[in-house]
Amino acid sequence: MGKSHLVRGVGRLSDVVMQRGRGSWVWTTEDRKLLDLTSGIAVTNLGHCHPRVVAAAQAQVATLVHGQVNIGYHDRMLELTDRILPLLPRGLDSMFFSTTGSEAVENAVKLARHATGKPNIIAFQGGYHGRTLGAGSLTTSKTIYRAGFAPMMSGVTIVPFPYSIHGPIYEEERMGQWCLDQIRLALKQQTAPSETAAVLIEPVLVS
Image 1 (cartoon, one colour):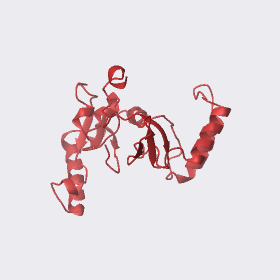
Image 2 (cartoon, one colour; image 1 turned 180 degrees about the vertical axis):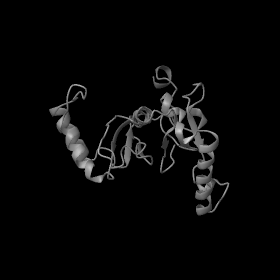
Image 3 (tube, helix red, strand yellow; image 1 turned 90 degrees about the vertical axis):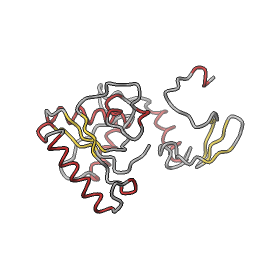
């Protein structure tokens, strides 16, 4: 069924059909027990079906399934905002909540361009930011994420990430300095500061 009727835009490592999970384990429809070493792409970093997560989800579904944010506020969003505020650096006190990372990146680009009036975004080689058109244009971790979708979003400049394991410099401090020099060079040769709206950084490279 899956191979016949689900599109192949998402690669799958196996044909197993997962049915349930508990902690670090998932079970297939054939009752085969498998260790989930991915944490569900880090979504289930507390484990599958953590009792507190399940209880919170059940309570919310029983109270309010969807609070449409362009109609009004809802109490859980305001509660989360109140909890995040003390964690933010001084000067950052506004938030935008989204469902996916791709959506967050797309809106960050729109916000940066709108706020600065500048068109260009700098991103780092090897970064993964999503599969939508804008986020995919900033993604360089694998060519497969961009293959067949050209032309990509304009105004993107890619610079080296200070990952000394991959070189060309294998000493961490010198590699970091070289990458800073490459950013300065990009600002002189590819995207002037007067044209650069934002620098998008993925602190830990994934995917």
